[in-house]
Amino acid sequence: MFQISEKILLTIWVGGMWAIGYIVAPVLFKMLDKSVAGNVAGQLFSIMSYIGIFCAVALIIIVIMKQGFSYQHWQLLTLVGMLVLVLIGQFVLQPMMTELKAAGLSGDNAAQFGKLHGISSVLFLVNSIAGLALVISGLGNK
Image (cartoon, rainbow, N blue to C red):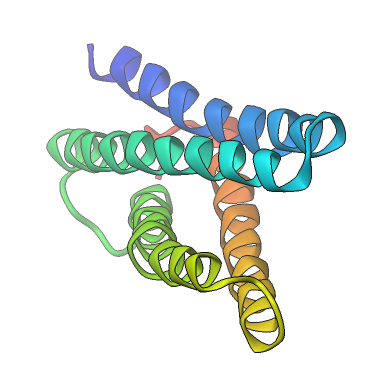
């Protein structure tokens, strides 16, 4: 039962990240006004963050219940790292970006927003690749 749950949770989380980040968001920016596309994409990324938090916590609990906690279990450490990156993105970077957008994206605000967006994009890329590594390797392997 744990193995099926792991696969489902990992598929929902990682598949959702890849679908939204690398398919849906680019299509939105190609087809819609940049402001509208940004708002829709931002909402989708926020939803994926909450899905990621839920899946990460559930997966961490499942892995610890199955195998115990070990600093040598790279998949467990990867899950914890991915959770931390999602939390930073959602609860540190996103509020800062929202505040800058509300103040108007011109001058220094636009530059700061660009930097934060870049950091957020790198964190998303790292999580996407880490998630893919977990999908390929499976969680039951040490």
